[in-house]
Length: 172
Image 1 (tube, rainbow, N blue to C red):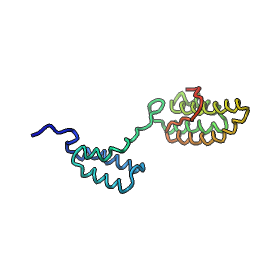
Image 2: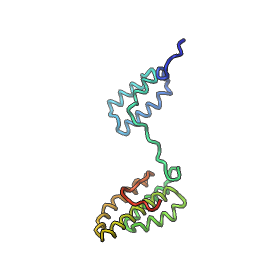
Image 3: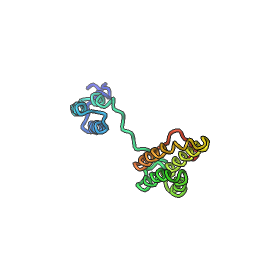
Image 4: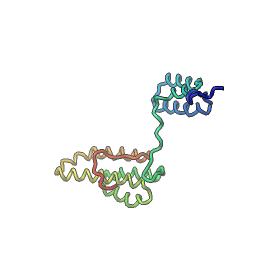
């Protein structure tokens, strides 16, 4: 009996095929594989004899990203996501005041809400400073600000972290 086989030359079991098949299904659902390539790779995964054969099926697929880590390391609850979305949306009519109030009131309970509300406060304070420095000309940026606030609210509602580009982050 020869025990000099490399790990990649060992035969695979059905249990080792399952994660590869799941990754292929996820890649197909993400649009990384077209239907023909998905079928071909599924066939290769099901008929793979060794670990090297099985590894070749998914070697060019990026691993599935893990769930986003939030401020307190826990996934936000539905209420947290709703409050974070509201903190972005309420900034449209109230500038930085609405998000500031939400940050001070609900931010104590949830790090996710605090982080998202602080991001909205920083964004709208930055816009206010630009408007003041440019003697009102920067006020034209508020049309873009409304769009960004809506996008940020959608991100927050889905539980993702949103960071506005090119702002002063005065509140951490």
